[in-house]
Structures are given as C-alpha cells and as structure tokens.
Length: 159
Image (cartoon, rainbow, N blue to C red; front, side, top):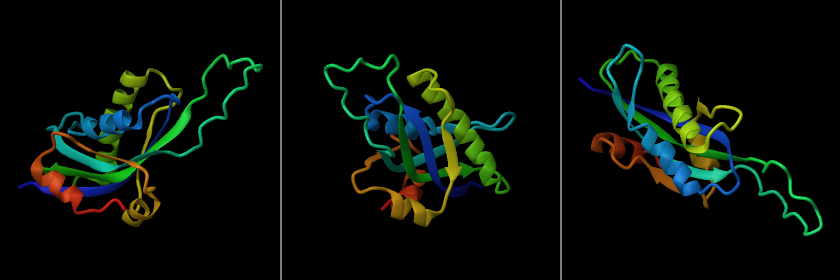
C-alpha cells in the first residue's frame, strides 16, 4: 500500500544574479522526481510552487566606479508543496526533507558550482505558502511526476 504525504516547503539559496528563475525552479522541481534514503527503496516525489527573488537586485554600478571583483549573489526562494508516495507510513517528515535536501543540494551544486552554503529545505505551514508566495512568482512543477502525486500536490493551492 502506498501512503501519500504532502509537505509545505520553503527552499532557499544564494544564486548568481543572472540566474533564470524558471530554470532554477524547474531544476528544484525535477530533482525530487525520485528521492533516495540510504538503505531504502527510492520513492517518487512531486514539487510544485512559486520561485522568486527574496532580495532586490544590486544597484547598477556607475561608469566611473570599478566593477566588483566578485559578483554578489542573490537570495532566491521556492514556496510550495512536496508530495511523496511512501511504502511505509511511519517515515517521518524530517526524513523526507533530508532526502529532498540531499537531492536539491547535489543538483544546485552541480548546476551552479559552489555557492558558499547549501540550500535550505524546510517544512513550513501550508498557510505560509499560500499567503507568502508573491503573485509574480514563477510557477514550477515536477515535469515527469507520478500522476497521483501531481494531482495531490495540485490540490494544495500555492496562492
């Protein structure tokens, strides 16, 4: 028997300022297609939500000012719902988040190199996802998700 679990999540990380949020968000969403726990059977996941910048872009540098040696990073976030299908009902939310964090950290490091610190993947309240996702957030969802998980996640409106 499969036990579905839906977890409202916040994923945050620093990114290069020229990062395309659609590409970043889709990377996060597709990374959780199959989650793994050491010594356990992999299990399917689905993530949908909104991706946005948490900070404002750095002000433009004047023509006479020297360009910074290192381009400052920007803070990006995804607020959404992670749904997974588990074979065992006693798997804890913290374990699913750890599996998602491992997958997301690996994917972000591969795509964007070393950004200084790993992404944060946190469980939050469903109401926070609904109330705090900006209207202009880029909507993303796992592309090749198990249909039942995609449906379950979509029943949790983002905004």
